[in-house]
Image 1 (cartoon, rainbow, N blue to C red):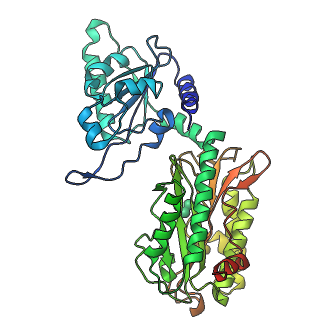
Image 2: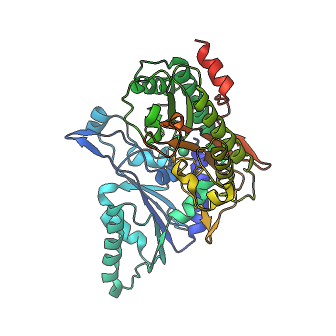
Image 3: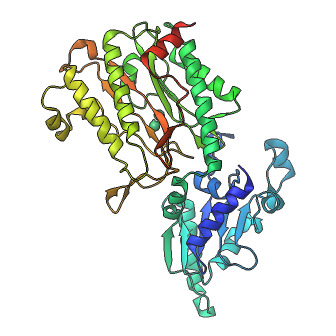
Length: 436
Ligand code: GLY
Ligand code: MN
Ligand code: MN
């Protein structure tokens, strides 16, 4: 991502924060795994969105109209020893030179410098309640300033959530963001295709997971956007199954929910296919029903349509189909009203997608489902999950879990499926798998 993109975002943020106010946001911190070993670092999405700065132990400050510079980074000073053991880091000079901060200071001096920046500001915008340490620091700094009031300084009187501004911005994707999301989507499609081609009975779920990760990394994407779900047979009925440790059985379906991350942007794809390459009759019927529900939901996507329309379309198709198959009994409208489908379809149709897999942005505005706008990206992922011990349905349906998930961009005229390259029609999947 070019620096100019980050700059545009900062200018927009500062326009909304307004002169006389200040915004503060902290980076993610390193998390210890054990002793001196850390978990892989992943920058805080909001912080990265505004700075492109990929270091822990940093803090960005935005002060619209400040003469000495509006954008300030606090970070670790350059340290030869750290560079030797851990590798490159920007240091104060790098923060201004490469990340275009107007000013930079050592993070260790923050308690001496930041209160002065808060002085005489009316409002402090920050991500409230998300980072206990920052919450605490801000209150400490304000309390310090209050004690100075006899010297004629004013402490900020209002704390405002930064997220509202920032998350509305993040909800609408720019061309530069979409380029990264397309790459994440394309590589993830390739990884799912590879998994379908590689899959056979007797392999373990984690061996399929390894194929997926191999394809991500082979294409330059080092990180998964979320832990991959590789769930054979009944494991697919556990919505967030990530153990990925069982042996794949002939006759079972395999549900894979996996997506790569490309420079902090996620893909999120699910496919369900037969371990042996050929759907059994009951699997085929349930699969086609989920696929029909997915098509019906995607067809709803266009600007001006309520977020919930796609969900409603999926509920209608799934409930009607389940009645036709004898899985649900009763009148469709009554079953929908009583939410009887929820025992087999217990989640919503999808979610916003972006830097976070479950991305930011409100789903309701003034208590009404939000209307779609060009540049929003969402997943469409209906599913059916029939537990093994579900005595109310015929045995042939039990233990089957199916989800089909694609990533959809709202365009000016309607939609574009970013993950369209990956087969999902029954014939296409069988052909691909049997070609090996
Ligand atoms: N992969 C998580 C989800 O589909 O929401
Ligand atoms: Mn998913
Ligand atoms: Mn999803």
